[in-house]
Image (cartoon, rainbow, N blue to C red; front, side):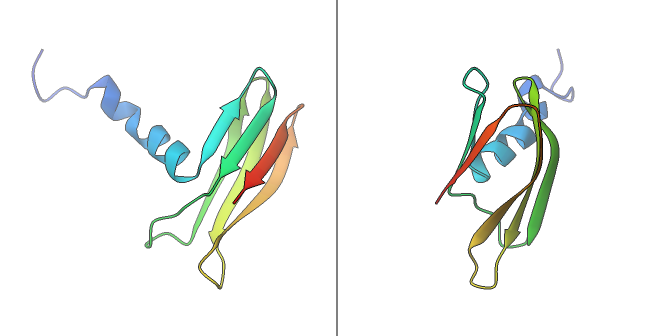
Length: 88
């Protein structure tokens, strides 16, 4: 192995960064997705995630910075049985 090869942890860094910053807590067994205190970095005004798989369900979400600076979460579409709860 050499130092110039991409490593597995590097490939997983972006999905993990999105999951933690947007507060995504999936529970596929209970068909439940919690969104806890989502945050966006100052340089981003909006993030949209489509086809996010939680078990056999799929969800389309939009996160956007509101006029007061608070992050607003909008559930655009759910395919399958999934409960989505936004906390904070």
